[in-house]
Image 1: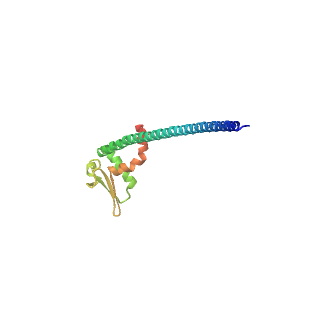
Image 2 (image 1 turned 135 degrees about the vertical axis):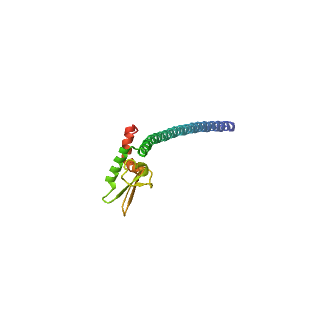
Image 3 (image 1 turned 90 degrees about the horizontal axis):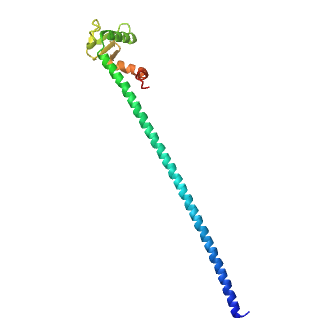
Amino acid sequence: MTEQDLTKKILRNAKQHAQELVTTAEQRAAEQIADAQAQAEKRRATALAQGKANLAYRKEQQQRAYEVTRIKAEINTKQAWVTRAFDMAREKLIHADDHEIQVIVQAYSKKYAQAGDKILIAQNWAHALPDLPVTTAIDSGIIIENETYRIELDIDSILAELKDPLTPTVAEILGVL
């Protein structure tokens, strides 16, 4: 083999080796590009799924907040109706007729008065029970007293005492329960 043939063989081998290196590099580059694209697609899909999950969570939170607000508004409306009913009862007690006043005084005297207690009636109720001493200490109602205690049963305290046990009944009657 001549020097020229040897040079040609070396060049051919070098070209072939160079071509193999280029082909291998191109294959690796293509694999890396494909891998990078797959990873990018995976990240995109994950981000999209996370975004959808976040959106669903926010939507659920907004729905819950709306539902809580709706329930609060409904409760407030129902409570307003019950309060209005007790306000109307207060007005009725203030302007009670003689028989109603007598029933109220009798019921609360039985409940709170003991032997020897003095019962005073508010001035604007005095017409119903003219035999009882009159007081101006309260607007409407009665006072039960003796030497050791004094119980003022004005309209507001009577209603306050009745409000807790009667609220469910009033709400049921009004149809707001």
